[in-house]
Image (cartoon, rainbow, N blue to C red; front, side, top):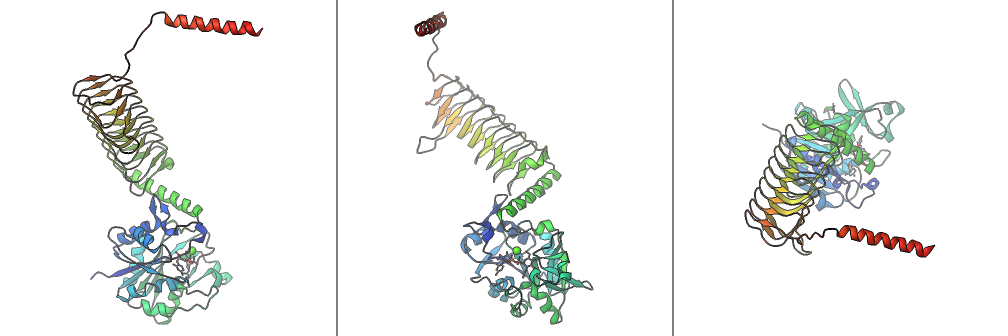
Length: 454
Ligand code: UD1
Ligand code: CA
């Protein structure tokens, strides 16, 4: 039978060093609250029951933690008396009876399911406590893992450690799996007789052993266990997240010329044989189908880009931009809530907002869909294979038929039927020789002024 598991996530820290009015675990990595990243790893481990220990912003934190596949119960730790005390804030949930209790922190967003699975496997193998550890060149501040004969015999906090113990470089990540049937008994035995006067969760190792149980440590990459205490660390975590995701995408068949200049969102989906040029930023909600090209310096969010479509350089796609197959949105164009039909081209200096553009249409340089009247937004419809001359303003709501022509520089306020030509501008007047006259007059004026001065 599959073992049952409750995850207890500690997120009651005061986040003082973040210098923020917002709870630390709500700060985003790749556009998503840290806590949601941790929750994803929990869910991928096959755990759905979660007790979330929070100190403030309980509702917001619980909402951010409510990812698909998880059932989250927030519990309040009103006094912050240490990690052991924090886990006991979930006493009621633990008391429901689980095979495994998995303790994780809400501020380690790079964690994956692999070490969490390994920790649970350690319990299944008969240990009462399994600690996730990491090797580091810089152990300062961490609890040290003290081992003998392949077993973990104690975790020593920095402040309580001897010089010899401080020299140990195998450290406690803080993440730990506990035998669920014994957890309440073990946790209840934790005291606070230590340098910090706190209830240390780490004491569980010695407590379990004193009762005849076993404890072990499993190893995980330091990078995955990076915690976040201030905004500089938040930026370092973001960097690691970006590196990891770019690498995954490249391995899956996405080309990036300068990957370190491409910034992804947590949910960016990119198909095979897509080329991403340098300096591209993705906001949330972007999907790109195979074979599309994103040229340099484009900013893309909430957009769908179909096979063979081309974006940029210097394009901005905002939420609701949908580019059909082989369509093109070129330099200095902005598209918001706009469907660009198959093979349609919006190539230069154009704003398309709240518009539907049919297949094969060509939108000339500097075209503006005037979608906003100061109060409401209105729709522009352009049929298939139409041609909008450069520098036209299409004042919505308005529709242009199939195969229609709009003359350059037009202001279009009335619907244009299929196959019609619309001119919405003053007729050109040409006056032969008039330029010469004007110039001569101007030169004469200049000469007269000069003569008056001298
Ligand atoms: C803890 C570990 C240490 C480990 C380190 C890894 C203990 C005693 N020490 O130390 O061995 O190397 O993490 O980062 O467990 N929290 C609460 N309520 C509390 C106290 C803490 O929710 O009362 C939460 C914090 O928000 C944080 C986590 O628990 O997410 C760790 O707490 P922190 O005070 O940072 O522990 P450390 O002293 O760093
Ligand atoms: Ca810490």
